[in-house]
Image (cartoon, rainbow, N blue to C red; front, side, top):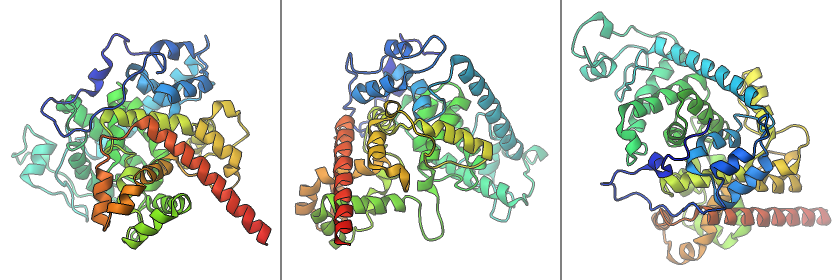
Length: 439
């Protein structure tokens, strides 16, 4: 179940020595504060129930030891109920592995490169379903006989619109895969690149509403590094996407993340009205300069190691035990869950950020804002003075925010987000009470 504690933790994230433009890692494992292998194992009862409250507290104090990060993430992301036993989780794990294998086989039947240990970076089909018989395409589909006219290489026309739409995304996934975490030694192996491509291709087939969008490879990459089994990595990524898929849902006129950008604008207007007014004057009132931070959860602003630490801190703070049952219900109904609702729960089982939302009564109305929005707001607040004095245009705003790359402290950022969240809720409540008194 657990990785060998003797394995060097940093070997999972080794960076190629020639890469000099990688953000510097600031987070260091602190003895006694990190959720260690020993403390993780001690958090389970003999039957396998996890003391999630104690675990969340430990993660908030010092993160997770890299050797157990993958399996802890499975709980944080709602793959497993902390009250389940070892045997129950093993049954769920095996069932999901079979489910993933079936979905992957469905994809392989439609396009045999899936599961072959290879991937493509060139378009294979036109929008009307006609195969592209280009030598480069044929060589990627079948490298052994790429230039041959053998029937094995000839793709048949496709008429199913769903299949066409899926196949049109496959080369874009490949192009993103070769750019994802390219500084890591892990991705020097072709098998790891193809594993990332396979998972994203299968997800794009299953989630027909969202499919594949640029940025998903950045979110999926850590999963296949941390979890040895491809199916386990897929389901961990799938659970993460349930939180974030709204950001990727696009229409002809808008992108899903625009809703969070709008919320970011509202928060900044309440917390730092002077900064908000300045950004609006510069033409940045839509806050599109923060687009990337929200889409890929600060993956570009932090080093690989620090971004993982930031993620687990966020998920521990946001943890809501209801999500597991909501996800299970949505699986039964064949629907996607994007919020948390359900019966009353113990605050001890919730993350610190979630407890604040419960106190404010946020669950009684619309879904609460994710902590990532307050993280961005915290960064803006921290850079407020510099933005007000030095930004004379949107290019200056982007430059100032780009300068934070590699210079952010994950724990400090989360602490700042929590303080800002509490301040925001207090100001909103004051505004509501004031409005009520006027009426």
